[in-house]
Image (cartoon, rainbow, N blue to C red):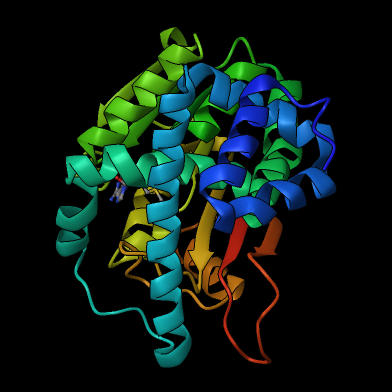
Length: 302
Ligand SMILES: C[S@@+](CC[C@H](N)C(=O)[O-])C[C@H]1O[C@@H](n2cnc3c(N)ncnc32)[C@H](O)[C@@H]1O
């Protein structure tokens, strides 16, 4: 693999994966082959601002490995039973969103790296760029945005990095996601244009904005339509939203099973959204005919 035109942090990560995380080796090779230096430059920005030294990088990779191994184990079980294990939102929240050690050591670093190491996640980010970010940058006018379920803040950061006049507000129920997001945005020197709220938007509705982002939250809920109706109230007339869902993806905190993009679209429409564009990417080729694979489904709606 040619890595001479790859930045130092991505080079270190590739070396680290080669030494200690061999199961993930193909991921960087495939990303570089498919997306080339664009992927490496994009990833370098994130790694460089958040992981100051090899120890930080190693600790993030350790978190990513635990996060992805756990998901792979759950996915194997899902392939057999084709249902997610029954779990309430309160149970998932206790196990995941309010579990500080898990969130800070595994979940959030794991998710952050997955945006670049999982090809379907990175393809979704690129769809976000072309279908949402570019039109937002070109629209001028009111560039206030909100992100609900901010998590790692990868998406909010992308807006703040690329659109200097944009100002954002984030909402997340997890105190650890809020802390991680702010830490990330400070490290990227864009936190002065962002306000983070630990808030459930169903309980306390948000002020409508013209640009709205919600990435991988719907499958975490018992009643996604209920949440989507609150989200719809947060979109100003004439505004645009980027909303995604993970389908057939058995993670510890995925409790609502979406099997295809049509099911998500039906929920979006019940909540009052109208479709502008749809994107679907698979995590990998099914190992055998009919075996469900994780999909990333993203919708530009208004
Ligand atoms: C898979 S993560 C989302 C990842 C994030 N959008 C990103 O790209 O990194 C799910 C996030 O949704 C948050 N969440 C779960 N239920 C929520 C709810 N009802 N309202 C707001 N946030 C919620 C969790 O705390 C967690 O930070």
